[in-house]
Length: 117
Image 1 (cartoon, rainbow, N blue to C red):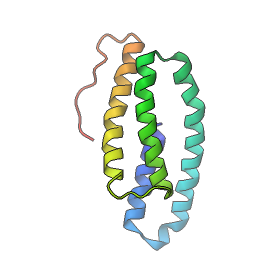
Image 2 (image 1 turned 90 degrees about the vertical axis):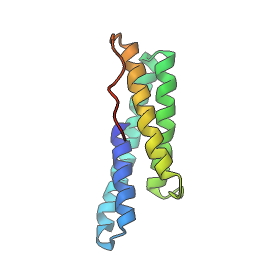
Image 3 (image 1 turned 180 degrees about the horizontal axis):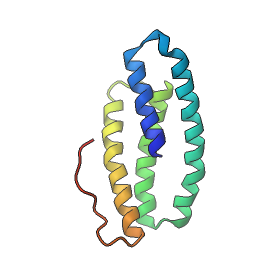
């Protein structure tokens, strides 16, 4: 999911620059996003199969935000006012997922050090 998240950011940043010569690169980035999204869907099943309820709930929240970011990157949803929210919220939801997964794995100190998006 993190690779989808990062690829979405790269696409949105490139679109913001709106450089015409980047179009082939943009098409390649969108193709990579489609590939990564399919991979994410496949790996999602592992989380559902092996994660506890808290981990799955945290993963779903992050998953939904990344899906929203993906829709923005593909041009299916306007970025106006939504992108910054989705980017920032997904950062915090990713941290919550990591902490829930670490607890689920039995890591004694599951809390991650504080950082900023």
